[in-house]
Amino acid sequence: MRRAAVAIAAGAMAVSLAACGSAEEAGGDSDSSSPAAKGDNIKVGLLLPENKTARYEKFDRPLIEKKIKELTNNKAEIQYNNARQDANLQAQQVDTMITNKVDVLILDAVDAKAIQNSVQKAKDAGIDVVAYDRLAEGPISAYTSFDNEEVGRVQGEALLQALGDKAADSQIVMMNGSVTDPNAALFKKGAHSVLDGKVKIGREFDTKEWSPDNANANMEAAITALGKDKIQGVYSANDGMAGGIITALKAAGIDDIPVTGQDAELAAVQRIITDEQYMSVYKSYPQEAEVAAEMAVALAKGEDLGAIAKDKVSSGSANDVPSVLVPVVSLTKENVNDTVIKDGIYTAAEICTGNYKSACDTLGIK
Image (cartoon, rainbow, N blue to C red; front, side):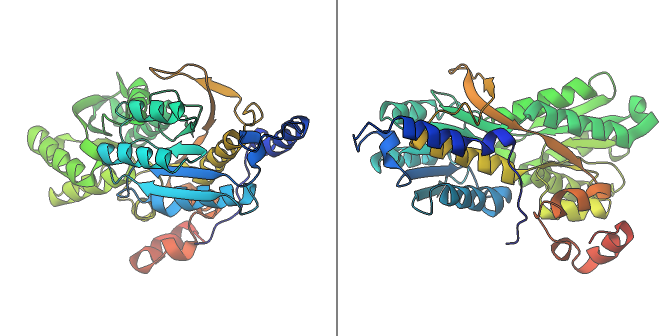
């Protein structure tokens, strides 16, 4: 898979220099069991939540693993598991990581609340936990994600832009994400902050497990309840659900209303350039992944996070967690070249296959 180099923020890059300094200053400590004495021979656990959304196996895992290897001169051992959207399975996977005595754990929680006891177990075993992409409950040591309320605001603003001067007379359906994902609540909050009072919300759903099939069923129910001529737009919290929503709209003979999304999945980009989907939110997975790797390696070596994480966040069970929030971009057909192609997420050849070639030619995607 081809990737272009993506720059990390200057603060994140500075960590290696700061880390070296701290290690040298501690040079008098000869205790081989101390974190600082581990050097590059660390053991990192990586737990991702599911594999229905394309990003986790296609982007997050390989990017995190690559950066960890770079930061440790290819000496780190990485243990990986995917929970396949099963919170109980993920709890078992944390137990396995503890048994295997990893030095640090990067965790993207299936259920942010349910995982709290597992995070506490890891902490009690001396294992720092980096909450990745979703703010897990429990005594986490670091967190990196995107500005998730901003994601919702960007989606809501795009939908209003698509509706134009007809927004006040328009009715939309809102398809939010899973209630087990704290990010979904933030996307929803951000979207409502923009949409409330500007457009009528005819139906709203919290979609179980972020499932495209569940989104499809919810959309069918909304069409039945509201009438196919009474829906002027759909807020979809991510691209996978947007695919299920658009299938339901097409089946009902609705093919000309804006639908939002998130994650810049390849299928979504192709839908966007052919006007089936209005927009997605592009998030720089390389930057998020690299920051997570920086955090994990620093923690495993007993180094301070001050050079990486300039912000602090709080969850229901942890305060002032060192954090990095990565900015997001509204992806439309007009800026495909400047986002996913420029950053090496996809090539034009991957996007412009078969029936999509003419749309790419029209838009100058290359």
